[in-house]
Image (cartoon, rainbow over all chains, first blue to last red; front, side, top):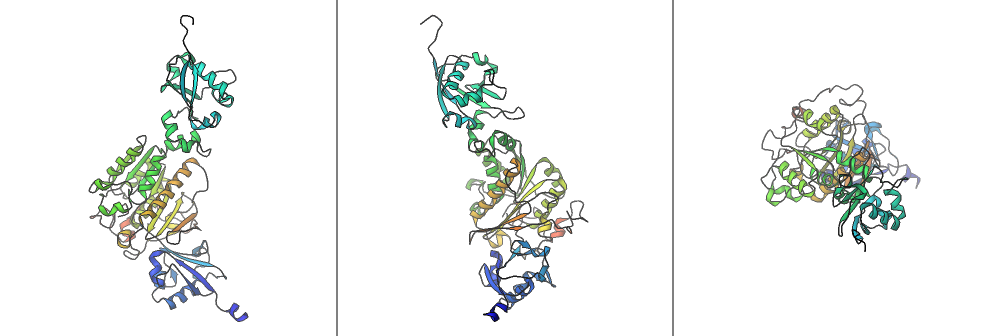
Length: 98
Length: 379
């Protein structure tokens, strides 16, 4: 059990409907990692092509927000923001429809 | 019966909602008398709590109460000595702070709002003095404008340049089948007035641009954003900041909705999304689709936020972003902060006037072409 607990955490990542196709058609996916960046990298492993929609040149796109629970990670430590068991990460692109 | 004496006349008295709980929750009560004063006395005897509302300590009608007999205020007749006749309708209407009076029809029309202590007659008067600009008479602007008109918001401006298309009717409640081909502003005005002729609807049949935004916005207290493209969204954000107007923002795509309120100095759209996506990366509703009923939810939320702001009640969505996922029926709220590095409202702002939004967003300005995918409205 100890080994499992020390392994990478499984984090729930939620996306909007227009990003669902990037992660296999679902609105949320489990990914592993101890920071926001690691979780996004893990999702990229599972769903190649996903990450470029969120990150470019090591920075989160300016038209996409990534939230750790209810906080914009831009106001935390960006991609280096550490995660804890049970955290929910949300990837939210700007929507223009009206 | 002595000469000159009359039988008592039976009068119906309309009780407005603020007083209804003092009269057994009745809308109309019967009372008898020869004069207005007699009728008020008999009313006061039957409902002692109501008597305290319609008479002051000296048994006179207080200045903030107006009494109508068949829709005529009694001061223009013979006051309490005004004779009444069988079948007359009387109304006892409390005036509002500031001397403005709600007519009996208004009291009745807005009674479900006025009866709530958070609104009351004074709140209804605030709504009637409100001036709200709706950007885009489409999916979001439609239900927002509709509920604001129903609530009696006194002045509703609508800016849109587009023409009603058949594909709009899946969600845009201001327009009907016969409106296809008409200007959206004109269709919208007709619909709003048919719901509530009390509302002053002002139409701006033009795309909102850097050239006209600072002429249009200052005419209003608040702005509802129902634009369907990033170019207009950044323009409206910046213009609201410069004009000092609260912006009630909403946006939609597929099954997702976002809503928030930007009050100048407490964060803006650029704090939330510093830059637009490259053209073509995030699809619009014409390209990707949108659930029609979702626009009703989000537009209604925008109307609610406007009404709360006008009334000064509740906790607004300022500094909070509401996310609605219709598929999972999940409402969530995340924090929205003013970014000290924001080029518009940050500590070292570099944007000091409206800019070239077409250049900023890398997309043609709506209205500069056939509008097929860049209307102000949710095309």
